[in-house]
Figure (tube, rainbow, N blue to C red):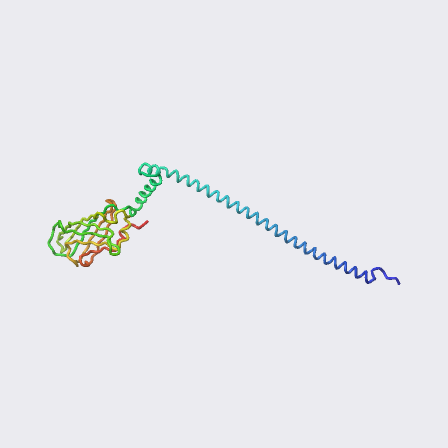
Length: 257
């Protein structure tokens, strides 16, 4: 009996081979299609992220422009407010415009913080009460005393006088008083007042007070440049030889700015 065409082995082999090739090709096509979809999705995401980045940059630039506009407006306002100060500086001081403005700025700073003023002169007034039955009421014309700001055992500022006063108050107490002024040629002249704030202590001496006397109370005032005043309390103490000590000096000064 004659075989049909598909019954021949060679024909069946060819059919199987062809179908296998088609299947393999189909698998590659499906894989490539899936990869293409994935790449397309990634590309869309990338485009979206890029668009968001552009939008973010645009928003940032807009914000910076707004801030710059605000700063320019603020600068213009400050320049307008600065005009009167510039006029004062040019009228009141000498030198270049920059030097005049600096002099005005220094003066404003001194008004704001008196400790920034430079020391030109200094006076002090001291009153000390000691335990004593001595009957005295006199002015010593050639026996005085001094008040000194001291740091690291070295004087920063000394006020002194060759005269002093003493009187018995009737309570078994003698009150000594001295009006002192700065001696010429001291290195502290020209330095800021805040230099005195660094003092370790104030040292006071009256030549007529006996050594190791019992100090009951006292006060001292220091005036710098005739207009800046500081008050110091003299606490009860046993004198160390012939010196009276005031500690915690900085407390009597205003806080540094």
